[in-house]
Image (cartoon, rainbow, N blue to C red; front, side):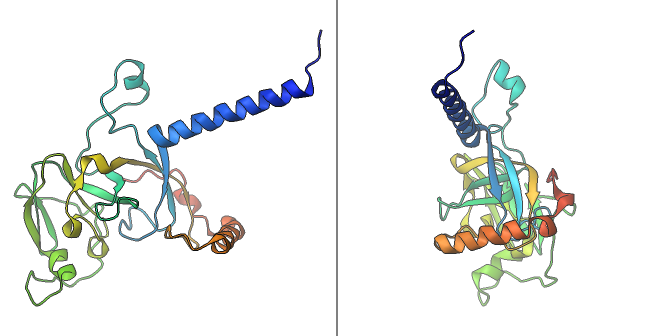
Length: 235
């Protein structure tokens, strides 16, 4: 029996690592991607520091055969928590709840949501943390005017209207308009880790700042991880 040389063993390990890297790269780009929550616009459904797996395949073009069985697909639906590129800054990813489909008429009256003229009971997931109700009046700035009274607007073809669950503190489709369908990246799948310590807002501030951030996360991993949110399914 011939012995395996150190060179061939090293080559096998290298090939295995390359295959694993390719597989992870493929799944991260086309099937499952990670995303973290840097702001409170989706509280209390998603918390700052939640880290998500995102199903990128669910909104892909229709599949057939084994793909359909292993990776079920469907069009976006009202109520989906979706990740998408910001219409204002396409290099930035956002997470919101999909409220309006193409052709829907969306309106907000005194904080209450209406879709196609019908009141939407969103009390199961929406938070109103500011008791004030701002009227749509010229003397108010646009941020307050559009927050509590908005529309009606019709969602254009191949677009989606998205709002944050923390409705009084969310910068969303009320301000920058509907999201083009091509900007959708996927649907929030589950929280794989939730960290209650300091969370990056995604802005690069240099190697030193990144190293300090990583060190702080490592030191606080056991004490600041929200263990009860592990594998939490956001709805």
